Image (cartoon, rainbow, N blue to C red; front, side):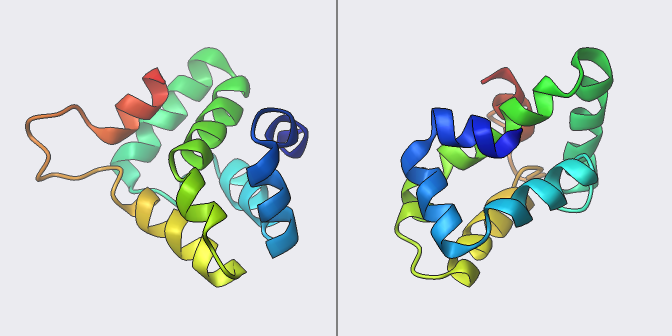
Length: 112
């Protein structure tokens, strides 16, 4: 289902991820674990909370937003390792305790 949404809403990025061979890896690791294994625990708790409130559609929307936020970096990736590295670095920074001015990035993504 996610691949269909990705192809519909982010076609250029979907083609790139498919060519790199990571389109299925992303959806498997993100959705099977509700993002718990790929984002900091504090951020994962927000995702789980909103998942129980709004259902599976939130996971699809969040995943599409994350990909869109990293669109240019992913399109510039030369191989699968480069693309995975871009996403890993981005996801690790979702709960930045040094960020006291702006709202938490995961909250920003959920609102988007």
